[in-house]
Each structure stands twice: as structure tokens, then as C-alpha cells.
Amino acid sequence: MKIRKLATTAIALAALASTTSCEKLDETRIPPAQVRVAFNTQAEWEVYGTPAVLDYKTFIKSERVPSNYPYTSLTYTGFGGILLCCNLMGEPVAYDLACPVECKNNVRIQVDPDAANAYCPTCGSVFDVFNLGTPLSGPANTQGYGLKRYNVTAGSNGVYRVITN
Image (cartoon, rainbow, N blue to C red; front, top):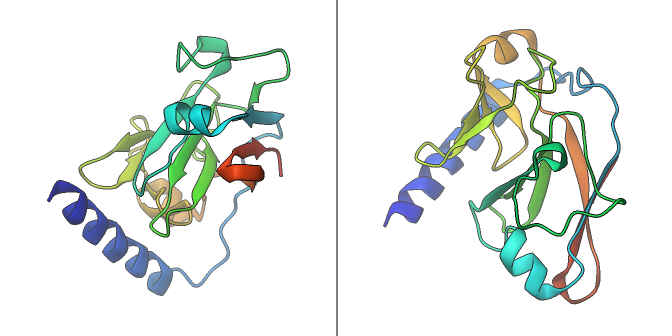
């Protein structure tokens, strides 16, 4: 029941964001940084990935988040970390965790699973992370700053990789 309510809320927010946002968002405020998070087996994807709608995980290599993820010397987690989400269509999407308003690698957005969005605890901006990463309210919305997106590519057998654009 809670998942259905979250999905309904997220769909409504996505529809609102897509109908009220006619201008192009600036998704380039976050400095370029290498990104590579690999899920090499279906079992790894099931544990560390986002296999279901409205699932999310954060990856911050410098802080070993999640602590049991098999980080290697070839793993890179962007400027502020990576937020990996499963969107409303059941597809994985990834964003940099750094708030585009604050533009600091230690000021990170946080997911609010009850509202099916993410927010910046510093500036108060709210983002639609289960759709396009668009700002819904706060300074990011008024200034037109969207979350920095990263490519998620599908490999064989439903295994994914998050890589730099």
C-alpha cells in the first residue's frame, strides 16, 4: 500500500514538473568527475543495485558507502557521490549527490522515500529523482539548476554500469 501511494505521488510530481518547466535546466554546475560503478553479476545488481521501482542507493567511495560494496581502484563515484534510483518505468537512473545550488562535494541531496523525491538539507531545494532529476521547489527551481545525470548502461543478463557522460 505504501509503495502504491509513493508511486502515485511520484507520478503526480513528475507530471507537474513536466508541465510547469518549459525552460532548459542547467545540469552543468557540478564539476566534471570520473564515474564508474559496475555491477558484474545479477546477484551484485540485486544486492547493490536498484531492481525495483522507487528503489535507491547511494555510492560514496571516499566514505565507503555502502560499506560492503566491492570498491576497486577502478571505481569512481563522481563529485559528491552517486544516487542510483529506479525510475517509474523500472529503469535505473543516476545522479551526482552534490546539490547543484551549493556546488560542494560534501553538501549532498538526501532521498525522502515518503515523498518520493530528494532534497538538499542546506538550501532546501527538492528534486524529482525518480523521473528526470528536475527541481520541484527551492532555489534550484527558481535558478533552473537540475541534478547532474550520469549514464547507466545495460550489460548482459540485466547487469548495469554507471559511467561518466
